[in-house]
Length: 332
Image (cartoon, rainbow, N blue to C red; front, side, top):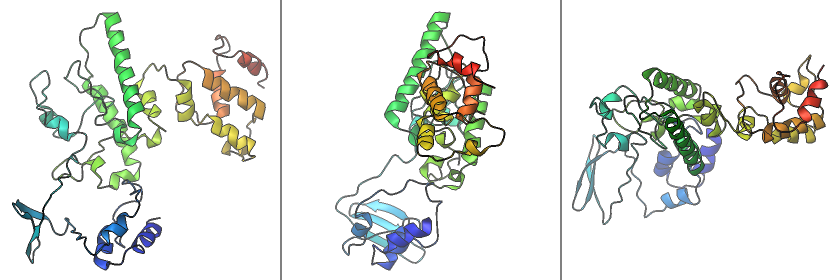
């Protein structure tokens, strides 16, 4: 994939030095482990003769002065005259701003000191020893790996639900335990280590900041499709929307689409498995999507397994549509 990209990109440029800077032949990152440059005419603009391109990894900035910027290499010091310098800031992502705010916990310990060996949060929203403090769109949450506005709404809903529960129970203070934060970090790390992101030098690992701990700054929701994966994990007694659960466990209208198109799924070819008819499957998926709240175990990956799980407790009253009782009676 990288070879395809680099071949296509280099063909758009004529300057060999610039080509080697922005599209080197030697792969420097896993494709997709950093954000793909979705651009128009970007490389053609860099290739223009009136544009000078400096590789700061090989030619670092030594200083600024009134006339411009000074760069230095082992062989030379070069002054670049400039009228305007645009400072690109903000790349100490997710933790930089928090650590610069002089935040202290209830024992007077600065957050910078508390996190000197690594980030510690619960769900990316709460920090141990910091009662009644909530962080939205922060470190160890899905954050930059999800759609920001709806995910922030999910976090706000979570906080509101918690505050309502505190009011009902007469609680004035709440904070996460060290154990819960360790458990959350373990999950964040496990997901991170299972992906190519672990080898990335992108800003979401902190690798772009000298002396910063290299660790996942975000909860990679790749293993839990969409920000709804965070929702599922965040609720020990989840009132998880079934539309979200269906998405997480691959029980959705995608299944129906495959059946309608005549495309067999993996479970269709499994031995000793009773396949659902299209009508049964359609009813089941609609039933799942119409439920108000359910907690599904992560082992469930298919529609038939979901049906068996949902209908296992035959004494339970039906939730949502009543077709489920008839469906139960038809089970072998």
